[in-house]
Image (cartoon, rainbow, N blue to C red; front, side, top):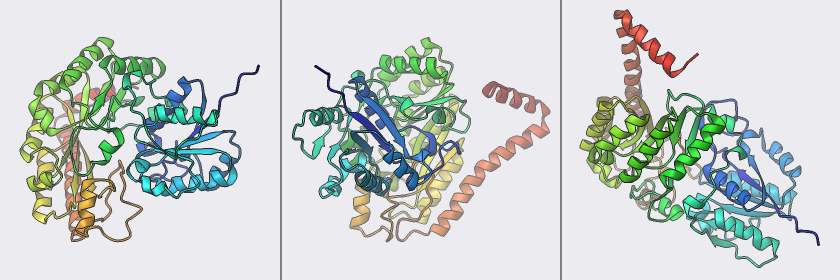
Amino acid sequence: MNKKIKSQITLIYPGIGICGFGQAGKSRSGEVNWIHHGLASIGAYIKSKGYDVKLIDMRTLDSWEDFKKTIENLNTDIIGISVSNLDYKIAMRAVEIIKDLKPSTKIIAGGLNPTIFPENYKNNQKIDYIITEEGEITFTKIVRGLEKSVSLPKFNKGEIPNLNELPWADRNLFNYSRELNCHFTPDQTLPSVTMIAGRGCPYQCTYCQPAENLTYGRPHRIRSPQNVIAELRALKNEFDFKSITFWDDTFTVNPEWIFEFCDFYEKEKFGATIAACNRADIICRNESIVKRLSEIGVDWFVIGFESGSQRILNLLKKGTTVEQNYKAASICKKYGIKIFATFMLGLPTETKEEQLATAKMIMNIKPKHLGPFYFVPIMGTEIYDLCQEKDLILPDLTDYLAIERSGVFRPTIKNIDYKFLDKLKSKILNQNKKSALQLIKECLKDPSKIISLVNKIEKKYPI
């Protein structure tokens, strides 16, 4: 008796909302080259169950015509597509094309947008199944149900996996050389890898929640330090990375976990630097964590300072104080950890005095790298609902109210003087340029500093 052939599965990443078609490999931009960890994890899990999995990364395609040709030449039974707020319209157009060209192919959609806005899909006849929340286990169950011709519901709540039991993300579903050759912080040594140690966030910032909790639930979950180290060991053997970026919203949530991770990491002698996200309040409460992380090679913290106004920080439910922002910066500098400072301007109800306070704070802290944003109310968050209730959102912005990981300077809120913000932003950014010019001037005055600087550069970027 012949064994039944398992379904052919294709995953689609429609991530062209920021970069557009035809940019992959032509730019060092992270948005063009970073992998999608969610799809890479789902792909790895499905593969571990014996299925053949392919992935279409739409960033590698040149046009919609190119996408059509790719689908025409595709031999697959089931397509899974991840839908973010930013890529919603792109994903829906892709679904239309797939069903027009391959009407018998089953389409499963998941991701942030279906989780937060399931009502968007109730009348969509082109999408066969929806998965909300986490997708690895449930996607596979739907595939097996289809193979057995079992009647399945259209909407399926994702089963929460044990993170330590999941296979590691299958990075090679993507053209992984692209991620290896782009950096997140300005001076990361290549090749560089990105990692996610956990899922969820215990904090209640109104610009993220409740979307974060709806997607990953509560409480925050994290893999064991041993599991993370084992994955890093495998990646080191395969790619010989020289730097790591942890994408976790807050890498330092659990101090006990951090100290255990540091001990394991130190023993491995990876010889790689680490960039990770941290919070001002955690840094202030746990200076010993900062010291220990600096000892194992953490050289960058991404810190969301957000605002120099306590009223605005309270509005955001950030859980930090302006005083902690200053103190955290001082602690980082004490241990030689560079600061990637993210902050927002143009928040709802924000006054010019509060905007100036933010500018003053950032200019006094003097971070090594800046990540400024003009506030964008993300659909699915508490502050978006507040903006809607108060009628603060500028008209005709439906396509733009989504998460972008690059600096965004688009007016979104009524009663904000964006011309003033443009000047303020330029003043902040120019101060960082002046810092670099000051270093050059110091080198010219003292030639010995040039030798020291060159030695540092050669050590960081060996020829």
